[in-house]
Image (cartoon, rainbow, N blue to C red; front, side):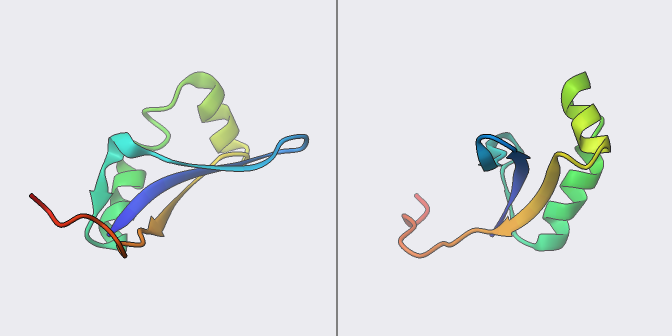
Length: 73
């Protein structure tokens, strides 16, 4: 399973990585990357779009560690 994560680095606060839960999870990395390509940067607000264009905001796909996950209902 794969999830979209946004990564930023602030000089004073350091790195920050946040899972974009609205995007859901994906069975493959290719599916995750396709979702990023389809919605970034068009869905970003002006400040986030500028940060993305300048390279200060990256969207990446990260494999989800499923160990210990609850079984589906």
